[in-house]
Image: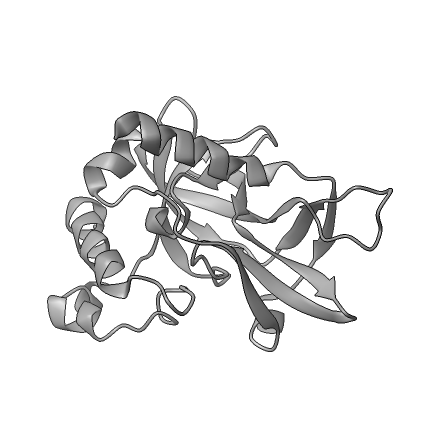
Length: 207
């Protein structure tokens, strides 16, 4: 199982090679048509798996500087990109694993598994697994791996990104009431499975 999981994560991270970037704003995403690029991915489903398959674990604030980055073959301008991601700056506020890699206050390039591309003249939000855009200005806990673009990427798609609620909203009842949209997840996600992992992560790492 460990070997299979490692292979799946390595395959998933290949989406973070890119050739060109364009800027977007978070407000734009709500009005876009959405399409899932790949689902049913083999991902970490427990805190132990997340820790094992992540280079670092950090809390940080996402900055409002998202860029869509895609790889496309210039010989075929009509074709969809072969891969893509969205790059934003994450300002690290707490390091929970990876002291040798990062320091508090670092502004790292975060490559998230979704991107925007124009389809039939209209921008469309394309996402991997069930990972929808993170919201700028919010604090998240990320399980990350270094990538070949010189930045960091979530080690297990949406199962490695967790919005940090305030202390009053961390109770079981409050978490039960959260919707997929509240958690920046696409429709169809295993919401109860994600919430179970969310509770485990918060119990272990949230201040």
